[in-house]
Length: 129
Image 1 (cartoon, helix red, strand yellow):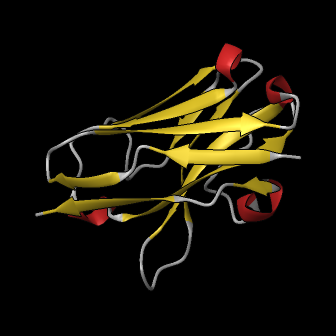
Image 2 (cartoon, helix red, strand yellow; image 1 turned 90 degrees about the horizontal axis):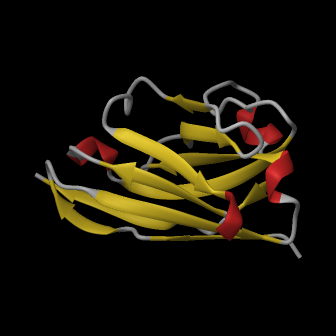
Image 3 (cartoon, one colour; image 1 turned 135 degrees about the horizontal axis):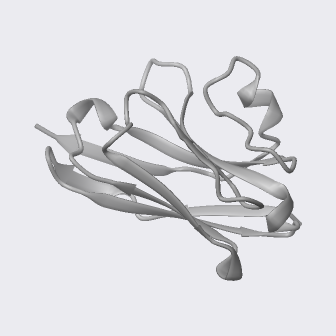
């Protein structure tokens, strides 16, 4: 059974940091891209960042570039999202997801929500001003 379990969310003040984790099981981790998405109340789900587990290539949405860092520990089948300089507009439920393929599957395309076939339950991130 495929499982993606997020953790690390919470409440933080603006300018603070959080590290999210996504623990994956039930599939061959090295064959997938792992992406982070977020959804704020009343807004559509949007792609934040992604990493290829096969070659380590990464991608960031413009809104988080320079503040967020994605990394992968393939030995633990876990992907991390280090979030620094957090802003109130970063408040959302953060989801990790997996997309099959040797190449990096970009999270900000229109088809990304379909390409990423496995999803976690999400973790809440709240940034207070």
